[in-house]
Length: 63
Image (cartoon, rainbow, N blue to C red; front, side):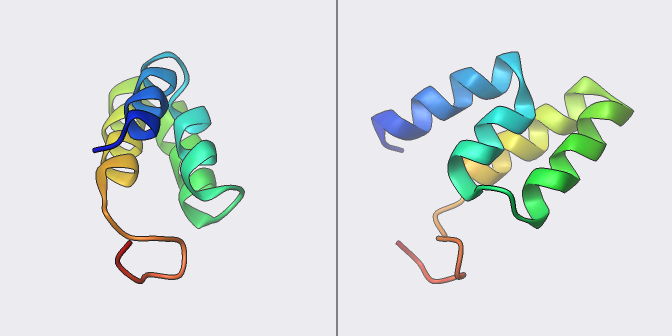
C-alpha cells in the first residue's frame, strides 16, 4: 500500500465515494459506492477500502 492509498482510505472514512473517486474516477465503482453508501455507511466504506486496496488499474491490468 502506498502513501496515496493511505490518504484515499482516510478520505473514504469521512466520505466513502470520495476515496473511490480519487482511485477510479467517475466509473461504475464510483456510482456503485454512492448507492452502497446511501443504503448504509458500512457497506460503502467496505467497498471503498476494497477498491482502494485492490492492486489493479482501471483497465484491469496489474499495476
